[in-house]
Length: 484
Ligand code: URP
Ligand code: ZN
Ligand code: ZN
Ligand code: ZN
Image (cartoon, rainbow, N blue to C red; front, side, top):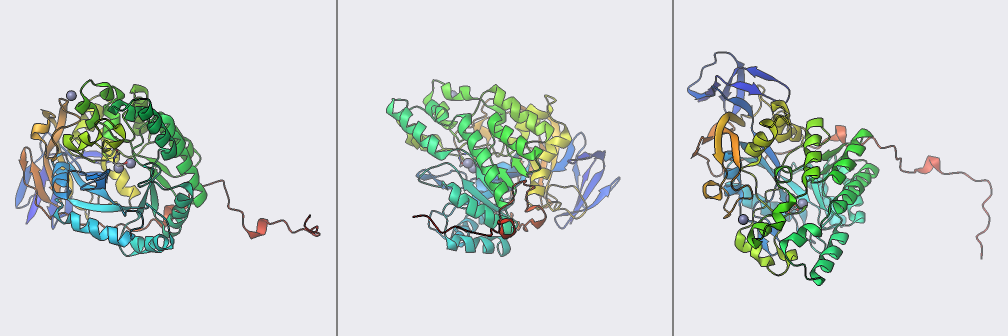
């Protein structure tokens, strides 16, 4: 069985050209003019691009007293319908739990995935056991990223001591640490103060997490990573202060990466001032939405390359789940959806406005993260031998986003009412058509776990800081007796 995608314009992170793409056995076997095969997909008027990779999802995640409502089936169906062909989720050991045991739990949840996937392993506590298991996670399980939460005090948060230990281990293993960068101690104090003053509504969530807590933590994480000798990836970069820390570090040769979310790029803090409690609570996530200046900073980062990846942090809770926080904003489950809308929203607000080029669009939705995660060119590329994870993108197809027609299991959509122009005509996962315009053809269980090798070549950041070792010790001729 072979398929040819015919008559389209191929757009990759670095090239735009006209050619057909032939697929066999789930891979690209030929790229060129006038190709033929058993099955033909008409791509005329369309752009043929690498399928999106969303490196930040939380499917069926236990969090804040409940579970996020999209599982690996609905979540990956939503992903494919929006042109995303791979997701990377987070395996979260509860404090004290073995990393390998947590991974088995996530392996079991992911068996129904409709598209390929991988996991980041979270470090939520520290011990010799965790130190030892990190090696097995990298070398036996094919996971080369470890996530650290600097917020969520009393739950997932790790302190600087734990983070430095883990980062050093990452440097040894050729793994990349990921960081949720917010100062969790300051957030906890601001939350308590706001509640004590009677500010218990969803807007107080935003007041408790100002850009300063994110900027401080981002800078701290980068400095700690640099001293540990590893690169670092900052998830959900939402503000200028965090972007500034990343920019400054990159200028010094430090490999710091930043990941704005489509939500932060296109929705702002006024959502929390909506008079409707549900409206505001549905948009509670960490970090919160920011103002226009921060949004402009993120767009500038994507255009200039100081920020590299657009993700969703898809962590979807129903309205009923959000209502756990009526009377106490600190109990509103944190998280918003976006898997299905990331690519159409970024196309509409990035390409149709002239903020990004099509090649930049491919870079920030797919290729850059494939390189960072060390799965390029199996993923994120249109090359002979690459997986046929592709989207045939129709720049003229339009719709109004509404929860009524979405794949996600929740009862609302944070982008409700937004008009998007630019949607998939076809989405293919390893050569199999999963989406054909409005027809969903996804296959439960089709998704495979993608192993990722360690990245020894980039495991040393270019720090000017050098750990003091024996040769720099001053040899003295006379040492006085210690004083009394
Ligand atoms: O509010 C958010 N972002 N929820 C998901 C968990 C996380 O912090 O990424
Ligand atoms: Zn986070
Ligand atoms: Zn509303
Ligand atoms: Zn997250």
